[in-house]
Image (cartoon, rainbow, N blue to C red; front, side):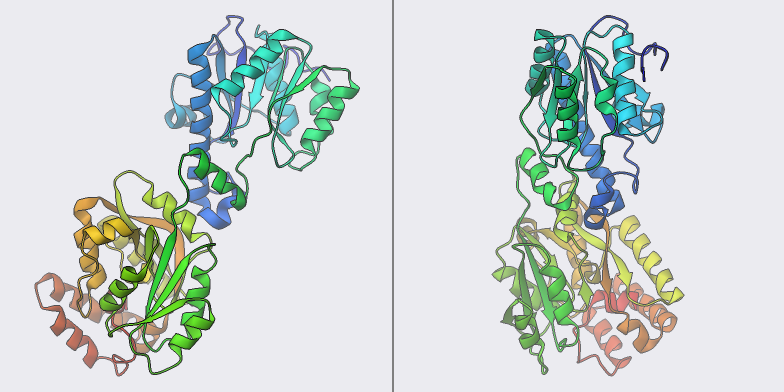
Length: 466
């Protein structure tokens, strides 16, 4: 099957000067449509943001090569449109849709069009391999310049390839390939050798497709994932604490500290058997969290309620959130266990408050670097509202951002007093707080409305969300 000049008409936005062409294959970073194998770890928004960063990294390498030699750079995209791609990645590049067909048909077509428009050589690269550099791309073009009959391949560690280049149309190299499998490079290599094409390969590189690949991205960016310390204040939480600890332990090398404020049940024993380090402290959520922070050795501190479960891959969500410029701290989106429609409304209200006002509460697992925590003096040791006061102290240092991945918290406090009755009453407590009523008095009011006030540590989430 020929994929010559008649396949696609020349694009006037692409230079008609006979220069080598570098073609970057990518997608518009739409949540849920890119890096889907990473959505379970990063969430759909986080996976899309990672794809955008990888594409920008690849285009920076392409621009670096273009600054040192005469080449054209063309972006072949799927999803989105020309205007959205230009807004996202810059207006000075040439953009074209990839068109229909499987990956092989789309790559073959892009090469055929480039050669038909006068490019002496065409090199196609993907956008998810952070090891691509201007030097590596330059060597690929040099190899093609030495022998126009050559085919150049850049193998990926997962069995695919990150680069293919040629000076002649070779449509058979893109046919009957098991795209998306570990056999792609070997099948293509065999086809080239059987056809008698001189073949040169570049060094193998890693691409970013699976959760275990993410450390490669951190390495390329010149840093490692921060070590995380998860601090769980607890009081009489033997029924819930194991799940909280186990969710924190899903991250390799995470430090998990349960701070027991004098439980009368088996909270300490259950936490220790689940893998946490357990320390004892005076009762009081702020006191306990400060005690845990003083013992913690991590770069980042996460303050997790004992009845709340962290999302899978929470360390990556934390790193991505804190890495955004102007960020002082973060928290997770709140999800409440149970199927009640009223609880879904509460979740929506909490999300609005957290994002619009920058006021997440403790049941959303507030996280920040240990250095920032020390700078603001830790939690004020109040009987309640300590998380609200912490966020107010953090505001001058930057934004408090909400990671889209949810923590899941128990619905027990809503069940104890009724969703709407408790919520409306607690808005009164919030108004009193902002009106200047001492938190000790508000805590006393709260204690008169529940016979379990001495069984669990009072929290702003208890007071304000239900």
